[in-house]
Image 1 (cartoon, rainbow, N blue to C red):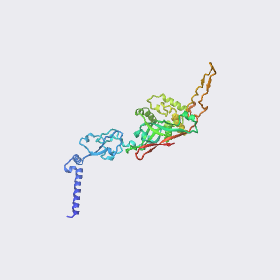
Image 2: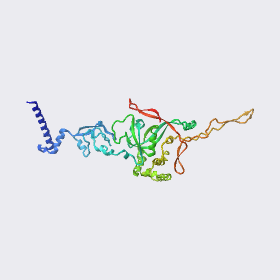
Image 3: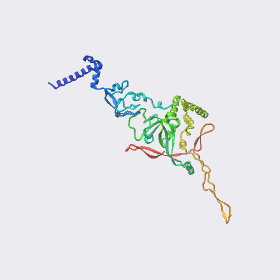
Image 4: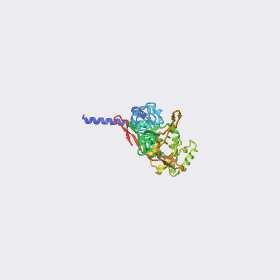
Length: 417
């Protein structure tokens, strides 16, 4: 028999067997079986597969390929997961999904245990609370909570820098009274909300860099401009805020701006100083659990934010430029009054046995008659925000964060800004 004949016979036999299996699946009644029995026999032969967790998956975890696997379903599992929507027995079906509750190892993955697929359909502009602005920061993980800060967390933004005022602006005596040059740290922004992490709007399951992490923070228009100005003049650090604080006043404030839908900033632009003060006073009369009480940029718990509505209004009008004087206020660079000269030293002279005329030694501490005052913001009697004093120039020695290619870790080297 020719080899071609043998090959044709083998192919015919295989095709015939496949046809028999297909007909048995589609028409089980031809073989004396009911449809349910035919499907049960097919499932018993082929085995029903399900997608399960390969290891413990914790709530908030972004699922990767290593977290799931496919295995045969056990006899009692079909009844156990009855009424739940199992994911297809296909590993890519779970990759990138986020768990909303813990999934023990070897348990099936259900839609109820994962965030909906449309949870991240919004764009960046849709995430920003009305009346707020967004700023992007690239920070080493050592300055951002180990890179563990999540979307929705609230943080305080700190700046640390070494300040050296220009000697052409201030005398040595004035520099001494300022305590400069010195390394200082201050809070640039309070209660900023994280709206994007690692520059992606959806969950990112890739391992994060050991060097830097990107965050987009949401804050008021003035603080956003200040943070944008200051982020290359010192080392920026994010300090996470307690979850208890976030659920109380901070979320009340955010809900107030969401309900307002951006109309308050529009009104603020056209408000006079007197109207701003009257509006702030009216909010004080509202109950503490009333969200409208927090529809303001002014924070009652902070002296730094006492004039925030005035600053935001001027920024929205385009009448305020951010400069070194804003940082001088943040770091409290104010000249104090020079100390009073010490009283002269008097010595009683004695001539023989009789007291003579006392001798007065003049003081040796020279006090300048006049000195410069760095500019500082004050609220005038007319209710307008004004600067007093003279402008000073600041030089910064800023840390420059770079990535070590050998270790993959962030290192800091000195720079000048």
